[in-house]
Amino acid sequence: MNELQNFIDCLRQELTQYGEMLALLDHQQDAVVRCQPTLIYEGVAAIDAQTQVLQTARDARENSRRALASHYHQPDPAPVSSLINVLPPDYRPLLDALVQENNHLLTRVQHRARQNHLLLSRSLETMRHIIGGLCAAPTPPVYNDSGRILPLPVSGRFLSEALC
Image 1 (cartoon, rainbow, N blue to C red):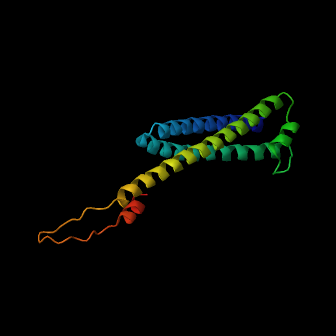
Image 2 (image 1 turned 135 degrees about the horizontal axis):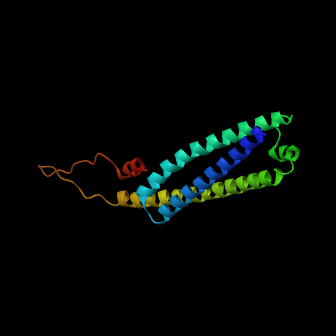
Image 3 (image 1 turned 120 degrees about the vertical axis):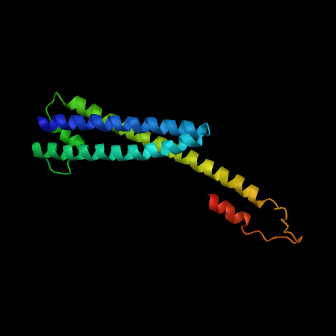
């Protein structure tokens, strides 16, 4: 029974971590829409850290699933759905609900991450266009003390690429 309780706890922890990730992605999306670069940068760091926490939770859940499968004499790559069927009937609805909710939140996290990636990509492309336009503008000549035009060390195209 210890393996079963551990598995339930791991599913709950994973669910919590998916919820945390979704909240961070929501904050990042809001920061992009509101053009708040500092919050975007901080959000990336928080999302990166949460990715590690989420992976740890997923690994713990997977290890717990293996231990539970072994306890109930199920094959190692036993899917959770078949594993639930051999568990005590009183626990099946709870486990089924936790698994479904984890899957639902995973889908929402993936969708939100794709949306944010698209928003960030479009923002970056807009900045490239703006910087490219600024750098492509004719550069006024710069003169030295003797009145000769100085060569420009950096072309506008190179500057645009360096900034992006």
